[in-house]
Each structure stands twice: as structure tokens, then as C-alpha cells.
Image 1 (cartoon, rainbow, N blue to C red):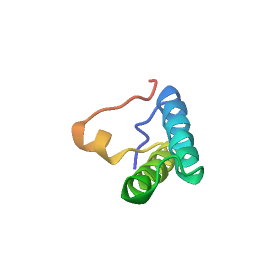
Image 2 (image 1 turned 45 degrees about the horizontal axis):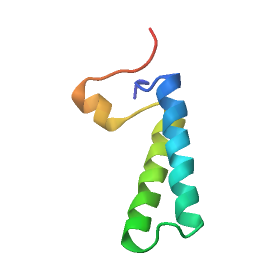
Image 3 (image 1 turned 135 degrees about the vertical axis):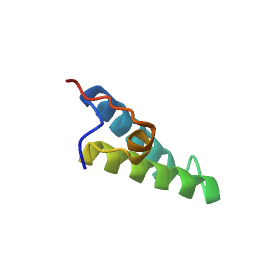
Length: 66
């Protein structure tokens, strides 16, 4: 796996993941939608942590600085 997620992209992904997790754990968003958003937060955090996004790979995108 070659890194395809740049630093700015990583910061945005972590920020959105934190926001979604906070919304879920403070019971602002509950039920099925809450679980979907929590899973999305986990996916965003993992793609940011590993600097790799499968969707970017499929689409041939790369946000890393050269």
C-alpha cells in the first residue's frame, strides 16, 4: 500500500471523525443513523492513520505532496 492521503487531508479526516464520534457519544445522533456515523468516523480515522484510502486508489487520486 502506497500512501495516497496528504497531511491536510489527514487533518480534515481526523477532525470529521472526532466530530462524528462526539455527536454519537453525546447522544445527539442515535439509533441506526448514529451507528452508521460512528462506523464512518472509524473508517475516516483509520484512513487518516494509515495514510491510505481505498477509494482514492480505485479512482487514481492522490493528495500527498510530491
